[in-house]
Image (cartoon, rainbow, N blue to C red; front, side, top):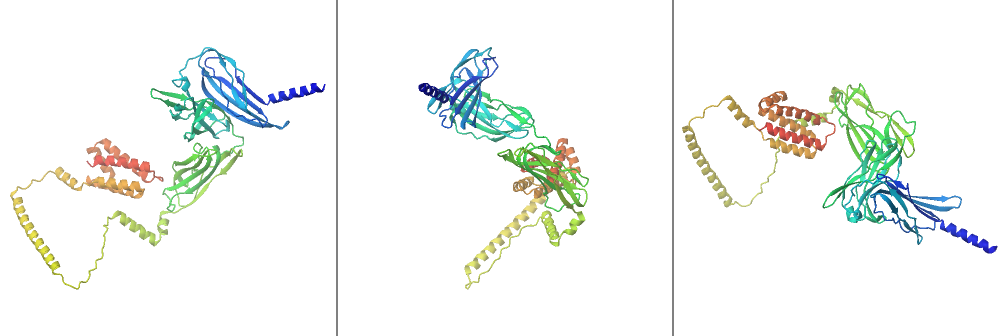
Length: 579
């Protein structure tokens, strides 16, 4: 009886030891149509902390399939009843069959604690197959993309990170993947994090090498199941250029919680809002004022709806110019977005400029945050009050600046000379000076003689007849003609130095000089003159240019690109007019 008990205990111990490592390979079904995808699931379960997985999954021969995607996840739990550490690793492989008929799928091998475990092979039946061209010219050199998203359950407008990898049995093919195109779809917003290629992993997926190509953020803008389209790229070889596409991934996008404030739009993250006056001058009624709304933080910053300035009869609001400085962060796009408004006060006195109420959803704390309404108090002065408030020094400075800007004053360089005393009289210096004076006198006499001869020759020539009024006007215009290339060079220097105020002052001088050349005082007269002598197209371009100059001149924010484009238009048009 005692021997039987010992035998039973040893049998149970062997059964328990055998059950510590479970390895299985299953397909989602046994029979597939030609267009169906064969999904294989590999499950490795380790019961016990002393078990160590020494190798990755060694896949069977899958040459009869195209591998179109793969992914894996590892879960670790502790059984509270037995206090045993349980580690479970699940891998999914998506296959596209190349041929029809019965295909045998071999065993998966893995080494755990110096022991090799394998699964049992099985068959799958493929019905009518649809022939497709392989991505690469050789099945052994196949290249395919795989998109991985670890966090597939997020809130609406909350980002999730996606990693794009490339796999191939030939590592040389990894270097041929170029022209990566991120997915674009109406219900998602995609922002790249980086396109830095990682080091090549020679054992990335079984016997395939892998490399990370890109990392990007996906912001789903609607709730429910959202499918992220595949990422496309091209594989360039000497003979041809092939396009490859990664797998698609479905996201479970949770709807935002109930109880959102009325002012909530679509801001998800953590943000701050501020409003300030960006003008350096004192606020004046009927004069433009630069007001900036600044939204900073981290989240769906580039895609969120910004708070606007509330309309009021106390001021007039113009559409803003948006500038953004954002970069990838850990929980979204971080940085700041500036909305530059031009506001003209309609009256003098105290004016309150208010923004719309703003609220956002914080996914970390899972709550809504209402920042309320921001107010900027401005005291607008009348024109008389501005003049009275100026000090004597400010008035003198303004008069001096106007004088320097309107009057061309030459720059004089003064040098002080000091005569050194000499103890001796130098006869050589005296003789040299006398020689110079004699040479100058002889040159003067020769010049007078030549001038008399030239006068006699001029008198013998018949007088030149007077021309017509048009010819006389043309000669005067040639005398008044200016070299506009000097203006162009000066405007280029002002643009490069960022002196935009002097830029527009010089531009007005150039326009005035060109109009004076044709005896036209106003812009309207000059435009009529151009239409008559240069054509209607040149006159229309001149009118559009004047409007564009006024817009850029009074724009609150001046960019280098817009000023450079304006200067190119000025050079082209005034060169045609001044011919």
